[in-house]
Length: 280
Image: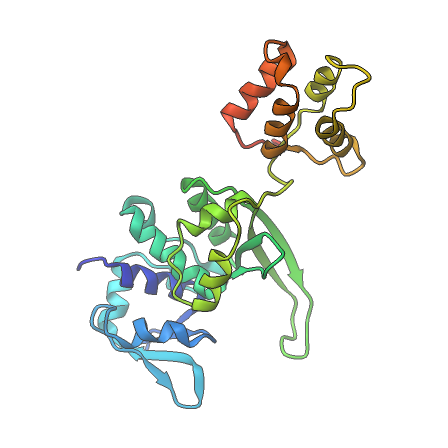
């Protein structure tokens, strides 16, 4: 058995959009975008050829006990959606395999918000899978936010359901462009169209006291960048100061490069840590 990029992609797509009927050896992928068809119909997945269902343009099926055994050997989560997780080979295999598996997952249950917004993410019914995706993204240097949301009953779904969202903002969305190998053109175009200059106030540093100390170095002078940074950080929203703003503040106060608050701010910028609140 040899892992390939196509197989890794298929396994990710199955995690997001797949189901199995073990009694008849049937594997089904349900995805509303035809761009996933070529890899499924090509035989690239262990030689198994998936066929589009009659009357269902969003479903591809294959009956193969051998493929089921291969998935079982790879310790794939052959369970219902709320119990799914990332298989072990993702953590111990090649980086490229993890990229293609993530790509299959994002082509399935991932989303990229349209022009004018700097958000993207992944949704799942499995809390464990959400944590796994967040951790895997962190291994690629991508910081994301995890949240849970209850969906109320609708005319189509008569019971409430709990879902999890791994959301990516700003610069981290730009980093995602270098990781994902999306095959759904619509999603790939949206992601690749995002500017590398995007940023998010969610990824900042709580440094209001340092900013106020820096302001004392030039009392009474109009320094618009620092003034705006202090105003935002001290507002009722209590937004942290972004690294982009820190760079601009340092430029604005460059004549004070030896002063203590300037040196501290410069060190914070160079460290470029991700800051978060420890809750437990």
